[in-house]
Image 1 (cartoon, one colour):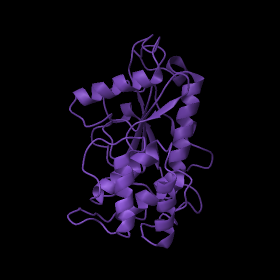
Image 2 (cartoon, one colour):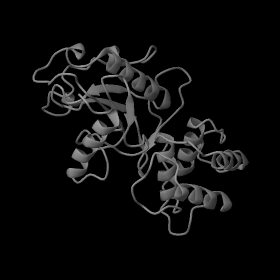
Image 3 (tube, one colour):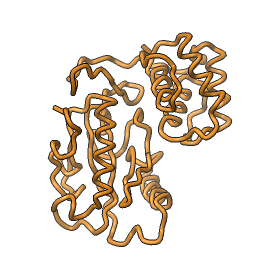
Length: 266
């Protein structure tokens, strides 16, 4: 099975276009679904578009570089070229086959798996973070502006993009960061095979406390929703705070998995 084709299939499905089962195999259903997506791409945006771009880079149809969450003419041309080549990688592309480790599952019948990077790391860890911003930092600016500032901080570290897979704001809005199929830069030593989302606090975190001491109900609810989505997408076996891996306050409280996991998680 090809992880790049699997990414295209899952991304198309997330955009409401059926490209057959997410089995990594190119066939008539995958071809038809991707063609339908390309024919009706206007207004498509978000994490699935990033996944399509990443897959097309790995298949050799796009040049390595920054990816957009909005459908671009370059993406349109690259996907068309892949369809014309009937799913075959372009000469010179480095194609990795993701391993299929058995791994535990969370619910009876849960067979979905998400892999990251060319080495195909199975995602099983979800890490909760804080943006560690001061009280009043959000005042007078849009979430998009705040997200862009966090991204600038991370780029200043020499990273190629924001390190988180997403940021959750006090009003509950979620702005996606790195694609789920990309390895993040959010927890040293545990980036491969993990998802990391950061919550923006409403007051400065100077001590350990309860989640409600630092975050709005809307933020906490949105984080639980993201975790539930992740648990459906891949067998998440551990939900943890950043402070479990480093000598940090982040996210400001001790993460008890049972407080964050969806019903039926085990």
